[in-house]
Image 1 (cartoon, rainbow, N blue to C red):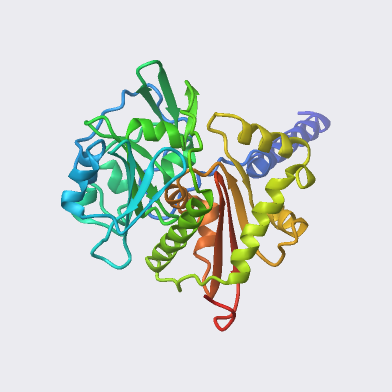
Image 2 (spheres, rainbow, N blue to C red):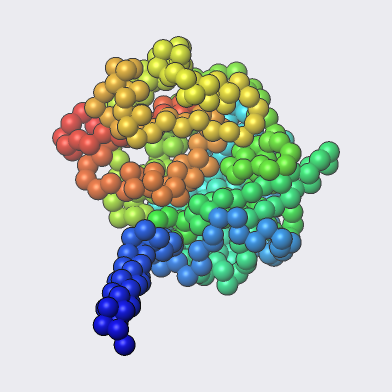
Length: 376
């Protein structure tokens, strides 16, 4: 064989070999594998979109689920009279009931004399059966499938609810065979920390999920004394936050008169002239949410919140602002099951917190501080 031809073929072989090796070894760099992020202890993780063709199969109603839609009197035959009761400002009253355990919370929304929602944390056993506190998503999978889509008949039209990936992993919705619904709240460790039971009407009023067909039921302000309503929500919200915090073996929150004043200053100044502090698409979003009747939510957090707080002369604090917020207890449970917000709630050390409420607008301020400072 001609030596020149042999060398040429050998050179081509070497070049092709090197090209093949280069493609193999650099493939992970230019075409990285898609990595699925799995939360600790999860044995069932739902991908976004899920299986949308499945018909929702309700599970048997037990415990609190059987009391949804019943009269307030029937509920109180078992759980006694409320120890706190106040107007929500949006067409239903809120009652808190005594519980046997110190770090537990039981709140009921009453609408037209009927139980419209039950919200609970720290309560276990038959009341929340077939669920159990600290159960994992894998445990839940043994009880029911998780569905990304629910169609609800309202009498006039159908409303279709869509759960996104985060909803399915942290706040899944379940249907009971008596026509009621439950929302399960999981923390970052995939442990069940709370349950909310609701009528379909209350579910559509609070509208915590995306709606792909139909519309949310508009919440109409209906309070005679908003100052009293706001203060009651702030007080009960602080109590619930500390119950959740103690249940994670963390030091309870403190509060200060200064921080409480700052939360009210934040809302007063911001709501008076939001156009002075928001611009462009953010102002458009805020205006659309506050003037519309859909189920959109406007949230300010992170760096944007720090900049907004500084502009409002409320500096040295962290937190977030959200609107609308009709049911603070329901909202706190939702925040606690939000991966980003939960990390802020479980920050260790001496923490002060203040909640400010102005009708449907809510701000929560956090402050790292020494235990000896001006605590209430």
